[in-house]
Image (cartoon, rainbow, N blue to C red):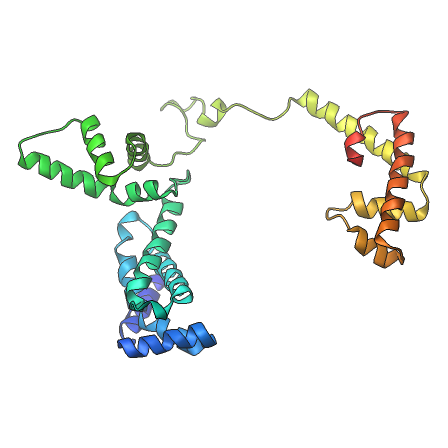
Length: 291
């Protein structure tokens, strides 16, 4: 209820905004492009917010909240203002329509289903035009006394929209269904298996996980022992170069230690050589550590 009230107030304010003539619009566009005048941008955006709201309202049938659609339309309008080139000789409203529509369509497609519907130009064209094109083709066929089967109709849609037949079949299947919970049972029986139980478990078996954990623990012990054979400065370089989430650069270590970048590299290579000799007597599994 509160959101609806805010939407109405926002829409009323937008409808009361000034109407820009071509000359004023051009002057504001230049002021934003050349001088980054934020007041000019605000005035330009406010004047055409009614256009964004009007376009957003056309997508309510897809089930998205109106306030979200308006927000996406506003983002598209701001993108249009940022990219608009007044030297091209077109009105800003004409240029903004494409950006507003693209922003709304991307939002609708992202939120249509938990499984992404698709974002290629052909998929987007099908998503927003399939039902309309199909209805028109059915009316035209009925007027000629024809009744094409589903396969023929899909072929006609593919030709009309300019996409592959398999794209039409795939989009039709996605638009005809809805998302289902993996915790839903496979039958009406309360004791039926849940769909999630049919998914293959790609994780390693428990025995393999135990072995991997054991190997990692052993490797950690060997590395600690090998580090003890290094000097304090060598240990510092190894830790900073290999054991940090974000490894330090040779240059930054050289600055901190008062050494040249090449000298730090030499110390690093010498430290790795000492550790390699120590570890080679125990295992060859640590080779990748020094790569």
